[in-house]
Length: 425
Ligand code: BJ8
Image (tube, rainbow, N blue to C red; front, side, top):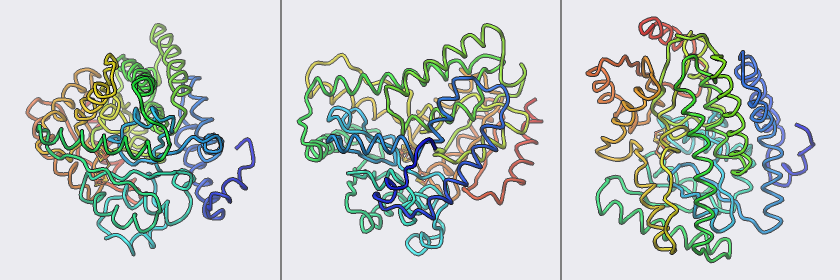
C-alpha cells in the first residue's frame, strides 16, 4: 500500500493482527494467480492498483466522503438498487464474502452446512477484518435464498444497522408488486439515512452513472467474443468484482480504457492465449473477491473463460435501466422493471436463466459450460441439474462443479477440469 492506513483501520475497530494476516494471504494469492499471468493488457495495471489498495485508498475515500456527509450503504446482493442509493448522493459497496475467515466462531452461529458465501460474510464480520462492513452506515440484507434470509436474523444481533429487504420468489404481477413496495420502502429508508429527498433529477443522475458502468463492462464482455480472446477470464472477472467497490465514474473510465486497448489487440489478432484455445462459459453462484479458485484452475488447464453467467458477471450487469422518464414515479417504475429481470435461481420457475445460458454459449462461442455451485447452495445446485439436461439436449458439453472456499479439493478439481478441457478440444 502506498500509505499507512493503520490508524484508519484502528479507528474503524478492525483487529489489526488478523487484518494484517488477511492482507498477506490476499497479496500472496494475487501475486500467484493474477500477476503470474502472461500477456495481460496494460490497462489491468489500474485493477492491480485497486486491489493493492482495496482496504486502503478506497476505504479512505469512503471515510473522506463520510466526513463530508456522504453515507455508505453495504450490500450482499445485486438486487439492492444502486440507482436509488446514488440518487441520495450515498455510496453503495459490496461487502466482503469471498474467503473463509473465523470459521470456528461462524460455526457456533450458523450450521456447518451453510454455503461458504454466507459463512464468509459472517467470518469477516466476527473477525473484524472488513473495513467496508465497519464503515457502512446501513447494511442491506435481502430475503433471497433460505440461507441468507435466516442468517440475517442472526446478523441482526451482530450489527447495529441491518436493513432487510424482502424480495419476490415468483415472476408474477404479485411478485412485481412486492418488489415495487420494497423498493419504495428502501427509498424512504435511504432518504431517512441521508436526509436527502430523492427527486427525479437525482434518480436520473443515479441511473446514468450506474448504466454507464454497466455499459463499460458490457463493452468489455463483447470483446471476449473474438478468437484469440484479448483478455483472460481471470482479469475480466476481476473487473466484474471491482464493479462492486470502486468509484463508479473512475471505474467506467478505466474499463473503457482497457476496452480501447483490447480493440487494438483484436485488430492485431493478439490474444492472451493462442487462437483455438478451448472456450469456457462459467455459470452459477457469484464469485466475490478473492474467490478465484475455479477460474484459476480452468485457465491453467489449457482453456480460457469467455463469459460469466453470474451475479458477478452478466446476470448482474446485463440490463440497463430506462432513463427516458421524467417523474420520480416513472423512473422508479423503470428501476423496478430492470431489477425484476434479474434471473437469480431463487425464482421459481426460472426459465429466463436457462435461455440466457444458451444465449451466452452462442454469443461468446463457448465450447462448453462449467457450472459452478457452492456446496449447500440449494437454488443453484438444484437448478444445475435441469440446466445440464437442457445443455446436453443441445449437444453443449457441461461439467458440474460443487465446491467451497477451501483449497483442499484443488487437485481433484484440476483433474476433472483437465479431463473436460480434453473432451471439448
Ligand atoms: S441475485 S445469486 S447476489 S442472491 S451461494 S448465498 S444463493 S446459498 S448469492 Fe446471490 Fe443476489 Fe441471487 Fe445474485 Fe444463497 Fe447460494 Fe449461498 Fe448465494
